[in-house]
Structure formats: C-alpha cells, structure tokens
Amino acid sequence: MPIHRHFKLHKPDGYISQFIYKSSRKKKVLGELFDFPEGTMSIGRLDELSEGLLLLTTDGKMSHFVTSRKVEKEYYVLVDGLITQDAIDKMKKGVFIGIKGEKYLTNPCDARTLATPPNIAPRNKRIRDDRHGPSSWASITIREGKYKQVRKMTAAVGFPTLRLIRVRIGNVLLNDMKAGDVEELHNFGKDSLED
Image 1 (cartoon, rainbow, N blue to C red):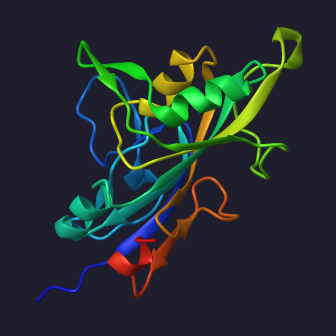
Image 2 (image 1 turned 120 degrees about the vertical axis):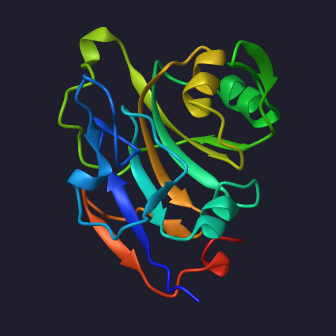
C-alpha cells in the first residue's frame, strides 16, 4: 500500500493552482514554490488572483473527499464598500450566480462581517486605496466550490470582491503562514477535516 504525502501551502496571488501550464503565455505554477513529490496534486483550486490555504496530496481519494460537501471551506473577503447585514443575510440564505451560462442558487452558508481586518500581510500588488471609497471585510464559509463562487456571491449582493483569502479547510488552518510557505502534514486524514 503506497504511503501518501500531504501538504498545506499559502498560495500567493499571481499563481495558478496547477503544476503544468501549456500555453505561450507564461503563468506561475505551484511547482515553482516547493519541490513536491511526483504525483502531487492540488485539492481544489484557488484562482490566480486568490490567496491562502491550499491543500496538496498524492492521494486521489483524499482529494475527492476534501472537495466534497462534507468539508467546510472558510474565506476572508475584502469587498468594495461597507458590506451590509442585508447582504450578509442574502448570502447566508443562498444567492443566484452564473455557472457555465446557467443560473445557480448557492446553498445556504455561514457569512458574517469582520469587525477588524484580519491579521494577514498586505498583497505585493496594491489593490487600491481609500480615495476610491471604503472597503470592508467579511467571512464566508461554504461546503461547495463552484468556479469563482465566493467572488460571484459578493458581486450578486452588490459588493464586488477586491481580495479573497482562504483561511480554513475543515480543521486545517492557514494560521500565520506567509505567502509561499509550505508545510508537510503528518497524521493527516479525514478526522483532520470533519467537524
């Protein structure tokens, strides 16, 4: 029986959640950050502009489990404007977003405003400054993972996402990892992820 290896990574913005990118346009890939063992795959994805916790494994069954609806994924989002309780309540109940040209109603989720900005290092590239109006932070926890779902949810309630950081997958936390940091997870299994 093969011995699988598992990692957690703080994916910086500007990287894609792949190891190979075949195109004439150069993209930064995960293999540039660490010498991962052969057969390592990212569990789920974060789009190029998104940051934060990404799990990687050599175990396809573990990858399938983590991407299932059994495991929560929590995101901190910086949005354009001062997000309202009404917008938070709408996201909690579910909002319509576009997926592959079709309208899709998101499942109920946990959402809340963050009274103070999270203790996360600033991005390398400036997002914008206060001359363009106020911004605010929220936490959104989902169990599904449609393409750019959290960004689409905040836009659907009138508060476009300026910055998105995944901070938790199940019970695995980003904590104080810096962008680009990689940690190998020992004794990692389903019990590390379920509530």
